[in-house]
Image 1 (spheres, rainbow, N blue to C red):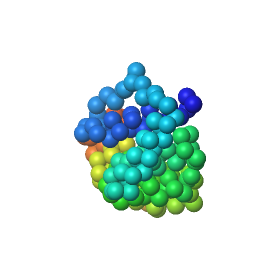
Image 2 (image 1 turned 90 degrees about the vertical axis):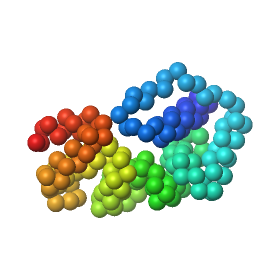
Image 3 (image 1 turned 180 degrees about the vertical axis):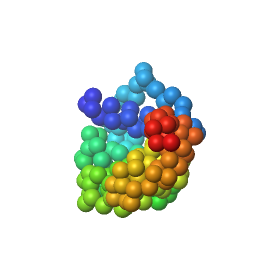
Length: 175
C-alpha cells in the first residue's frame, strides 16, 4: 500500500514540476503527503484516463509513468510506450525525453539509437535541458551518431543557459 501512495506522490510531484516555467528552480516538495484510500487512488487513475482520452497531454504522461512503473496499476510497457508517444506528439517534453531514454538504451523496447536521438532532440527543442545535456554527451562520444564536438558544445551551452548545472560543468570541460 505504501508503494501505491509513493507512486501517486511521484505523479503529483511530476505534475508540480511540469507546471514550473523554469527548469532551474529548486523542485523539492518534501513533506507533501498525498495519502488516501485505495478507492481515492482508483478515482485519480480513472480521472487521468478520462483526461488523457480527452486530449490532456499531462494526464497521458502521468498514466504512462504509472504503467511504466507498474506499482499502482499492472505494469504494461506497451501501454506506457503508447501513452508516452501520445504525450510527446502532443508536446510533452518529459514524455519525449523518456522516449529518448527508452529507445536509446533499449529499455523495454528494441534498442534504436537513431530513434532515441530523435526523441532527445525533440525534448531538447522543447526546452528540456537535461535532454540537451544528454544529447551533447552522445555527440561527444559519437554514440549512434558521428562525433561532433561543436554540436556538443552548442548543446551544452543551450542546456547551461537553460539552467542545467551539469551542462555548465560539461561545457567548461570541452570549450
